[in-house]
Amino acid sequence: MDAMTEQQVRRSFINCSRGEASGLTLPREFGQLALAELALLGWRDAKAPLRGYLVVPQGDGPVGVSLRAADTRMSSRTPAMCLLCQTAQSGDAISLFTARRSGEAGRNGNTVGTYICADLRCAERARSEIPPWLRERDPEEVAEERVAELRERVDGFLDAVRKA
Ligand SMILES: [Zn+2]
Image 1 (tube, rainbow, N blue to C red):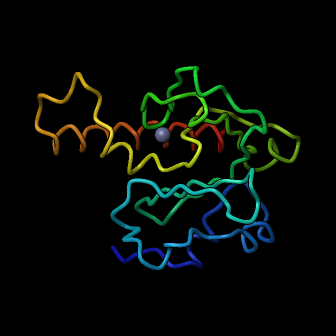
Image 2: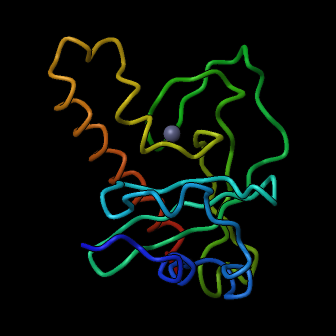
Image 3: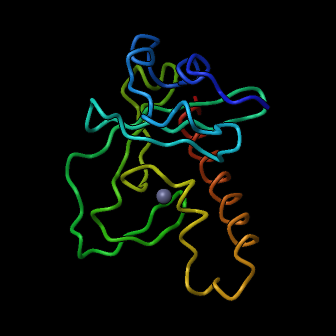
């Protein structure tokens, strides 16, 4: 599979207008990423502080969702967990994100929300942050499992965004 082009990414969004999708800021390292090999590309918009995006490569092309972070943050003393990559972190590293549902539901103001790593870099974290109870196992095998589970949860989230 070829790497995704900028145009493919901008066209992949299922819950924002074409205008919004063409105006969003791509991640700085976009040109250097081996996007097809990533389980998930997630980033915050450098020019719109509460905006973030998830783009998931799929067999028939990428699927993207636009997200909005809550403007309140949890305390750094509160333990929290990302519900996509299931990495335990301090509360200030996790944010509640909402996604407008696609289609008519979204136009009527319907959203779905979930707690995700504030920087949206779950794909890296699924590989690098191995929980202590899994550290006796083969690290590559554990990383593969964590990435596969991340994909399942992200696909579930995409389904919720798409559900009519
Ligand atoms: Zn995460």
